[in-house]
Length: 354
Image 1 (cartoon, helix red, strand yellow):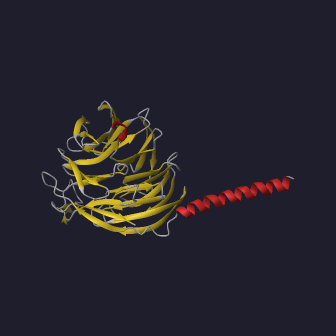
Image 2: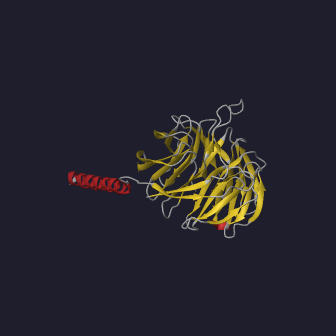
Image 3: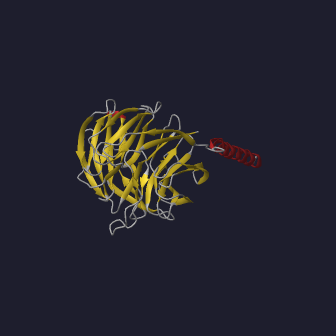
C-alpha cells in the first residue's frame, strides 16, 4: 500500500512536471523572425531640432504615441498614418495613458511639468508643475492610483494625483533615476544609473523599501517586468548587459551581453519574449524559458539611434524611432563623450514584425 501510493504520487508529480515543461516548450519560438515592415517618415517638430524619446502603444485604442521634441505625434496603429499631434511642449519624454480617467500624461523635462490631455480628442486639458529639472519617464500605479514621474538629473520621483492633478509628494532617490515599472500590487521598481542599482518603492507608504545592485550590469536605464512570475529585466549601458532579477529579493538570476546605448526593454506576456533596443541599431530578443532561465532568440538589425521602442500587443509589431545624424561636437569638460547629433527633417518610425 505505502509503496504503490508513493509510486502514484511520483507519477502525478512527474506528469505535472512534464506539463509545465510542455507549456514552456509550446511558448518557445523556433525563431522570432522579426523584420522591417515599414518606415514612417514624420515632419520636423515645430521649433526645429530632432530630439526624440519614448514610444507608447495603446493596443485597445489602436494608437501609437511618439515623443518628438516639442510635440507628441499620434499614429493610427493599423494604417500608420498621423491622426493628430499634442503640441506646446519644449522637450517631451514619456507618455502614459490612464483609461479609467480618460486622461493621458506627458512629461516635459525642460519645462519641469506634466501635461494632461484628453485621450479621445488629444486636446490639452491641464498641467502639473513638478518643478524638477529633467522630468523624464513616468508610470501609472493602479494600486495607489497615482502617477510617478522619474526626474533624472533631479534624482527623485514626483507623485501626482491624476484626478486632482496635483503633486502629492517628491521622494529623494539618491541618484540619477531612469525607467520604472509598476507591479500593480503596490510596488514600483526603478533603475538608478548613478548607484548601479534598482530602487524598490512602496507606492502606498511612499517610501523606499529596498535597493538591489544590478551587477554584472552597470548604469541601468531600461526596465521591464514579468508580473506573473515576479521577474525584473534591467538593462544597462556599462557594462552593457541585460539581467533578470527576482522582484521580491533582488537576486540576479541570469545576465546576457547587449550592444551599446540601451534605452528600452519590453516583456510580452503572451509569448514570454523580452525585447531590448539599443542606440547601436539592434533589437535583442530573448525568451523566458522558465522563471529562472532566459535564452537568446535573435538579434534584429534596425538603424543607428533607434534606442526607444514600443510594442503593439495585438499585432506583436515593434516600433522604434530614429533620424539621420551629424558627427558629434568636440568633447568638452561637461560632455567628454558627445554623441552624433540628429539632423532635423529626417525623423522616422520603423515598424518591425514577423
